[in-house]
Image (cartoon, rainbow, N blue to C red; front, side, top):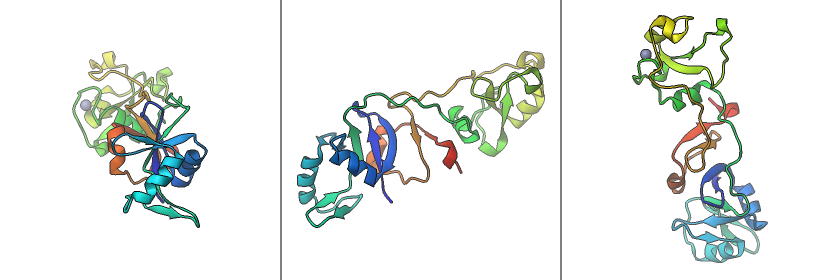
Length: 198
Ligand SMILES: [Zn+2]
């Protein structure tokens, strides 16, 4: 069923939600619909506007008294911060974060040709989290083995970093979701929720 992109008050994408939930937020006046021209409509406006819309990409719901276009994008009224969320530490998100590059040689690889590397080896107490894991191609990974980079005569050309869910830059999305064209101008970069990661 169709999902709705949820923006904060500053029109930064923060999440997606099922359309039923979006309509509830709209009805309760916790959110307003954002149209293609960045105009914002509260529930009453949207009811009126829906009467004039002949076709709508997300379709309509019908009740005995009204026909309402299902919004594609809504903006929350009170919530102006990106929720504090960590990007889940998963293989797919790590590859995405490092742009499918090997952090030692800097070259791009297919996911199937990359490994995850503990910068400080596990045998020396290195953690398995964003603070110590990088992507490495198979030759670099083999060359490094369970040594520190400098012991192997290597260095990180792509430094260790942790993805941040900055407003407008990154969206934690839940799969499986069909992206809508109307969302694209609000979204630059997507990480996936770990529970639903394929
Ligand atoms: Zn490499």
